[in-house]
Image (cartoon, rainbow, N blue to C red; front, side):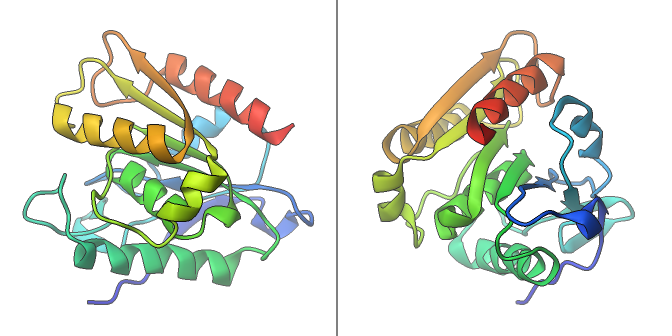
Length: 208
């Protein structure tokens, strides 16, 4: 099964300066490319793009992959979407533009996929209410050496991501990255100003 990203919204891609970072938004399950760009109000003034996941569920509702259990996808579920994101990046962004990847929920999984396949291209990784593929990926060994700084935030009241999925991601982050992990009381499967203020602080440290 092949996947192609044909829809996205963006700002400033036509004026990317050499070597300047680009923010890439990866939305969650059953939403679309318009879901996350409002978060730019918390972030540095940088070019950005928000991609629509390739699997259409219904109007304005899309997914990065299909799986019987969405929290435990198989490799064949993920590879088409991972390749589709990288194909879009290669076709639409300069080779020297480092990426700031922010993914929410299923998009958080895809953010880990980008980190685990081409970590040298990422300047920063933000995983919000996300989870991960539990099998091996091409750059996992390299990540244990690079230990990039990653931000992982989730709501304590999140009922969508299981405790087991949270545990798996935390264990992996501890062994492969220097993760900044934050939890937020009273927050469910969502993002609020507390989260984004912490994301902004993390990015300030990564971009200086």
